[in-house]
Length: 264
Image: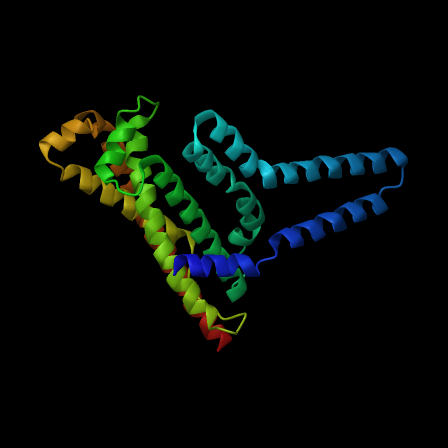
């Protein structure tokens, strides 16, 4: 169902054409407004550099896939292909995602963005651990990595996995509910950032509870005693974030009810 909604959304989008048309129009306007020859030359050179940068963003996934496939194998190449494939959707969707326009079109694109990012993250995790793994294996992998902030990463990565799965289901359900609404200005509250961050906070709390409920042998396996200091800091940060996020959600619901009343 998720793939059906996502692919259907991507098939109907024309972000690349829109960006391309706006880019051409901007270049034409800049050149027409500049009077001196050096200014026109500067506008053309700037447009050329920006165009090359856009082209690099578009083809970078394929380039990285080939490079890392040759170096480290297919799975590693595919992992970097997924990572670099995030750049173009983020570039084209960032402006629409942060817009406050309360239209069904904007909400649909926002939900599609969250679905796409969630799918890519989950796919990256699968390229690292395979399709059959447990949270404790994931935590152990990062706790034993020896990387800087390994304790924090051990908590954050499984939390992001749970968050991605949760937000995917919510996005799909919300997107389906919007498909049958024809009113473009229908005030439908679906995806607000305090609500999204509450998903993340809940996911982190779940991982912390999961780790605390492990057996002594399993806790020794992930060096749980060494992680207690980091866990304490994370708990304090989460506790400080919960109340503002709840207030933000209440404000969003209140504003939504007010907008619906004004529409009526």
